[in-house]
Image (cartoon, rainbow, N blue to C red; front, top):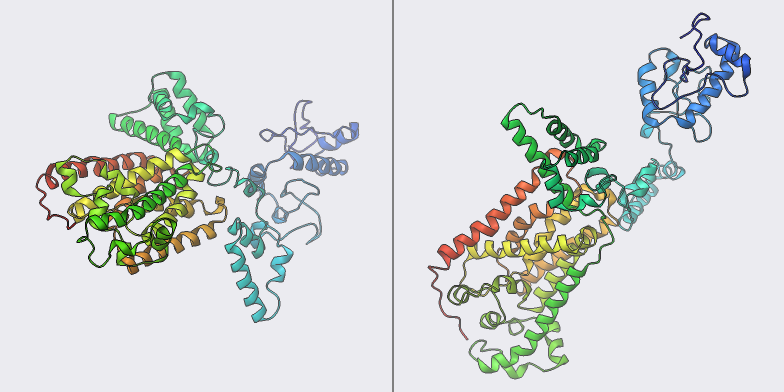
Length: 539
């Protein structure tokens, strides 16, 4: 408000533009502490006065220290049309935030070009890598791409090389505060949720409406989270009883419970978990193979017709015999079908007549040769080590167990039950969708992602080579394991970029579990095993 007759009272404040309407959360006194009556008179005279310019400069410096970036944006958007000079960006000195104000500074003085990289200054490295000959630029680009393979955060390194300064908020990505952290995407695990948001049953009970206080607490946790606007909307409707129909209320209840289950499936800490399950599985599989390799010569001596070209005398005993299994790959160093059945492979006649249901789990730990053991163990270690150190032992163990059993059921129904089958690959391929989705959605927050991707790709190539050169023994268990573990593994992700997909994932995972662990076993035990007739295994 300008003019001598519009004198503000002692309680009024002025904005940096000289307006009397105060901005939210920012109160700026009309006069500086040392200006006295002269500054106050200049402020009453408006921006046109001589002393008002000094007062305005002081108010701009004070506002620059307290005004946030989002407030700066609203200032430029709301008052940008007042003067043509408002298009000139002026950077205050020190740590002040940029203000777009009416300035009499000469063209190009104390300004920056807002076009390249949205105002981020170019680094000296970025200005240098575009100079020189074409060959030099190509070599520099190739060296830069090679360096990204070993970079801890490749996207940040590439942006810095290209000339953009990475914002300071990216510094906390390794600690769980980045784009993939639950504090940003999960309303129940972030600040304000406390320890009570870590229990699915407790949160479900509170959100389902047993107490009014529980609904209010859940609404308070979600109201400041920009990733959970819809669930906060439904919580508010539930608290105020604004649902207009049964269909609208049902959708709201399903959305709230689904989003809550998805949030609590992810741990509060996305790093630093010990890989106990990964180490235990690899160790048990190697120990089981060592015992099988030591007993196999005695089995051949007892059943010489099982492998006619492989006499028991050709196998050494002790550590030398184990070294033979590691170094020699051939038909004689692959376990025979009857021997696998003795050690717990999946075999329909034994599971139907003797009711040996434990073979569904025992077949996940067996390997018929060392190349298959090495390829499966390497692939499992590559994907499970990432998943377990990021999401914890218990969650990864549940997903791997569901994938292993589901892949076993899927292969038994698709290929039959008349062969001695091993299904250890279902563990590794069941965690592969989680690994791929995590890198696709949270690439910037994962340490050394390129090295992890290259390692898994090399392990997949090793797995395929082992199957091509020594015989493929897993049937459709890898495919079944990937299908069975995809949706349960997706629940562990911090986010899937939109809450309209996140709320649906728990129900999709429940439908997948119903199909793999209820319908498939019902068909197998109700039809396949009941009418199974298989020829006897040669021993």
